[in-house]
Length: 259
Image (cartoon, rainbow, N blue to C red):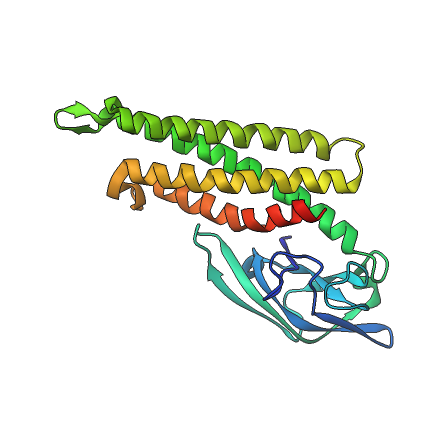
């Protein structure tokens, strides 16, 4: 069974607590109304975990519940599309969707902290994927510079390009180090704030590295770097998507400063 997670909403700016989707009690059932955006895997999902607010203001951490919803239930509509990196995602609309109280995961209004913790682990996972993708971009760029010739000599011998590839290497190492550090903190007995700060610092740093490494890889390869025939273009699209997934560099920098 494929299950998608629908928590992001238009205008939420990556904040999982910014939930306007409502869950209203109706006897032994709850009625869900709202819309979720950028739900990864939604077009192929049989069930969807939906965050909805049972109480509190639109951005309160308390009052959020998670519900397991059948993707084919009456009132559920999914508009599918392909993301920049070729994955499937969808806009999920909930119009008077009725679910039994047993569909609620956990206590009523108490899912905010768990949702945030799960997103932090997912954030670190995509940051780790980005580190691997950037390493691949660096390796392929260095190899290409040794075979591509201009003015009768390999472009890898040009000092200006060597400096740029050195900068790519530095960014890869910075990203790897901070992701490893964040993983160690996340698996430690530290408090929730320290873990959240570690994740945000890693995602912010990785996001900055993605921009330099990805763009330099394409620039040094030239036009072929953005073609479908070369995997560099696909890797560039993937790291661009990873930069935005679960919050971009700017969001996590602000989150780190606020914790």
